[in-house]
Length: 210
Image (tube, rainbow, N blue to C red; front, side):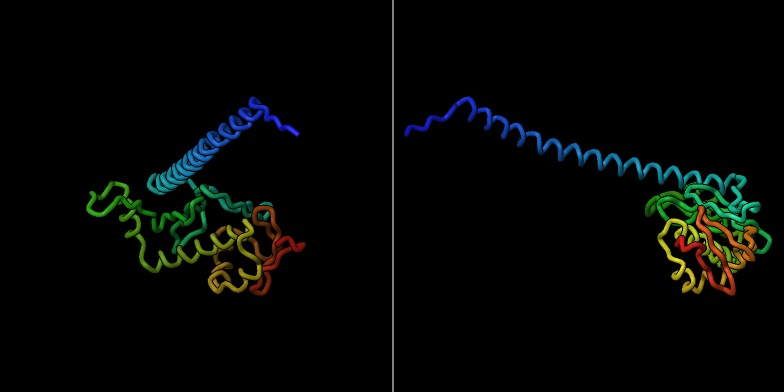
């Protein structure tokens, strides 16, 4: 029995294989470029958000009210400049940043520009604002901010009700935070659409939503 190979088909197979091989590195490279571009874009957005949060502090912008007192509800969105009550009669405002952290008017974040570089006007402004509050005031502000950030993580599903109740900082300062923003703890309230109650120092989810 004589077996004959079809040269054209074989060449076509080889050609297809070579084409696929030549395409593969290009696809990987394109994916890497897309990933790098996405990373750069995300970095730009975070920086723009940081600058906006600083400008809100330096320019004395009017903050967004965290509470809707008519519905006894809180809505938290990253990148928004919120009013979180007051410390020693002084308004506490700030922004929860998408990249993490909270930029507060009691202790503005300072952008690091490297060792030996000249201090920028923004850094000077941040330092002056920081120094305008006492250490005790900044500590109290940090405690209220910690409560806010815990509520933010709860709303995002990154923290459970049980962990909130185990958080000593939250249990100690949540009632004061609630009073400062106008949250009525004597009745159910919502955080980003999720319902809760707070009774005898214990946070409870309503309808087992969390």
